[in-house]
Amino acid sequence: MRRLLPLVLAVLVAALIAAAPARPALAAADGTLAATSVTVGSELRFSYSTPRPAAANWVGLYTDPGNGPAGEAYVGPSLKWTYAASASGSGSLPTTGLAPGAYILYYLYNDGYTWLAQPVRIQLIAASGTLPCS
Image 1: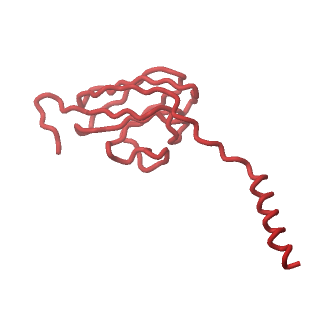
Image 2: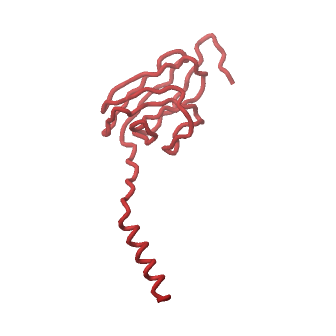
Image 3: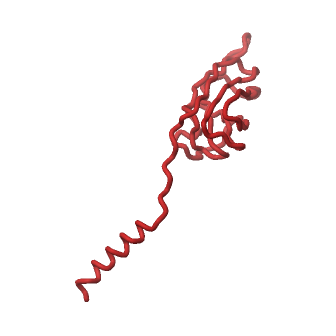
């Protein structure tokens, strides 16, 4: 009986693993996101597209480097965000209250942090006549 116990346990573990539902793999970031650098105080305009539209898809702006979902997981809040629910379209984010510097724009799935497109690095440029913060 002692010799059979390891074999029985191995068979039970294998059966449990086989019966467990498979965790779906993350879908590839198969959409598009485009934006250009802007002057602080202007609207940051972007365009997007995805084959996975959802009412809660969203675009978020994060500092670079910073707390953005680089690993497709929450690390910290976005500075600015808006929903982007259609299969394709355009939108804008206000830049008021932000400092000049490097930022990253993410297009994310369904109120989560799965990328719908590759992130876009942008620069917020100081308005003329002002000095950039360092």
